[in-house]
Image (cartoon, rainbow, N blue to C red; front, side, top):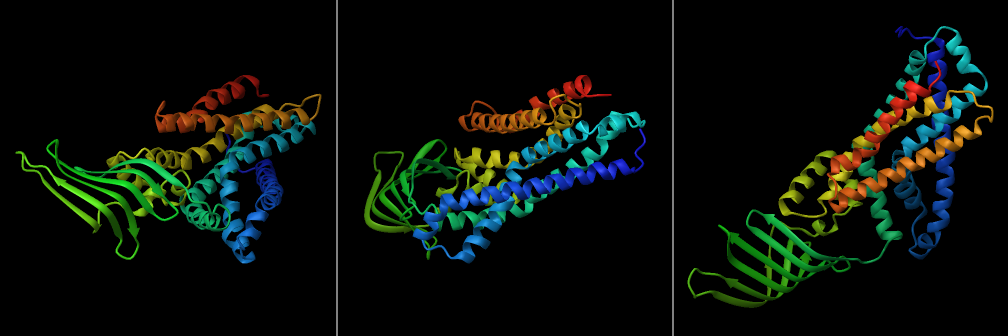
Length: 363
């Protein structure tokens, strides 16, 4: 196959990139208008400064939104401009001019790999920091509500276990706090407290109504009580805020460290960190898969014009996103490994791409 740069390569590449970014600008404008109309009451009620709304929220919301739906934008863009080329008989002219269908796919693949690498770079280096600023703004001006975390079981270090019946994010207080030390499968000591409040100055916990029992091998267990006491353990208030949103604010190294710590603790929230890690790589790759599928579905000239191709493209794009959401829920429920659940849409769509490319695409 001849890979010499041709005018048709630049023509298709420019059409692809230009159509993609124009579609992004149009859709982002519409999304921002709807988002403002939805949140304007919260902005006014919580007295959000205009500067913070623009620079802390929307400047950081835009890359997050673009990256989340970039595979869908790529797919619809490919369907749109390729269908238009087919309707104008440009695809027929390209193939009749001696350029094979495989060769025609080269500029498409170069463009989609460029977009995929851009998406990957945003995922790894830009969006985590942007999400941190955006979520901080939302928690203060949009979602300023207290929440409670219940039935927390952590192994904070080998042989040391923490149980909390409930944790209030309103006052950073854990209720029915229990700390157990186990050595050689034997319970050595157990500390219980009615409440444990996070002390940000001491970076530790202030316990009230404490009961400590030290277990001996004989019958002489030592029991002490205390109305108040402070303790510093390998557990901070931030550990209670780990969820599927907060993992979006972590860099790749921080995400790996969190997964290691949560695996050691037996924290069920580790699923969110694992899903986030795999999604950062699976989403850019899906743009390549959907580009191949989009070109094959739209490169034939249809009697009904490009409307059918665009409708089919939108339906397939939304079905892909729906499938991705459903498959991720399998990982959260434990029915499927995280790696398989996140990559399952790409695994299923790849054979579909091969079939359409080999059997249905024009030659």
